[in-house]
Image (cartoon, rainbow, N blue to C red; front, side):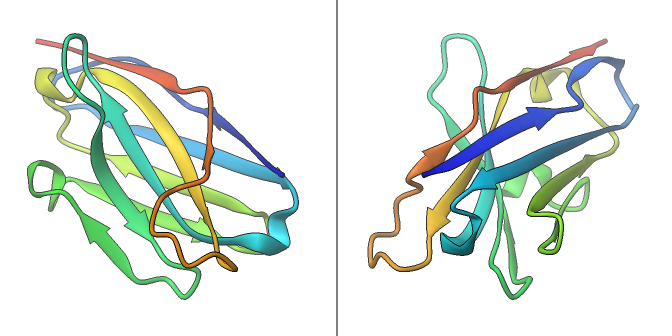
Length: 120
């Protein structure tokens, strides 16, 4: 089992920046692609960005050019650098990880979420 713990959320003004971190523990040898999702009040959870174990990245259109996902495999940690934040980025941000040994494209492991609030 893999445990994911996010940190770094908070309140920031529009145009500001925040860096989220997600540390994995437990059976980290099984961790493949990692990612970030977010869920705003009254909305469905949506993909923000993903990064493979080899460093290939994928971003949702609303965050392209503003957010950067990265990972440190030695520390079993994934990061989300968020810049030029907008009020519509306000959401709970969730870290997730996919088991590299399973054929499923679903993310099997999820963190508890961290709140990001962007004030206008």
